[in-house]
Image (tube, rainbow, N blue to C red; front, side):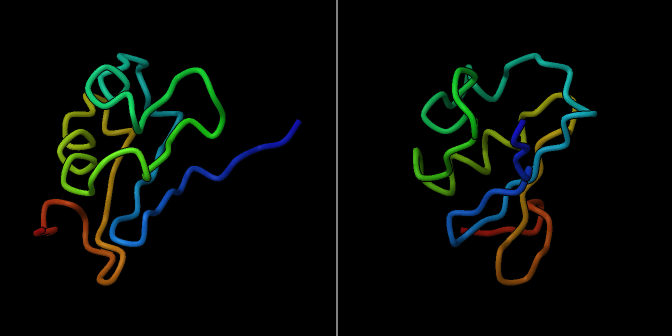
Length: 82
């Protein structure tokens, strides 16, 4: 079985996913289904929406399983300004 890294990038932002923290509320998929797809692997496609929308949705993750950081500075999203 092939395993996938849980780090995704669109050139502007890095999104990480920690499956052990996920509570499967599907807030990400319900809020931005163009990026967070529950029916395919890899399930995160950062080309599906703007970086601003991705960051906004990641901030809504109830468990903290999703996080993002600025690709240039590696600072977490709270410091990320578009």
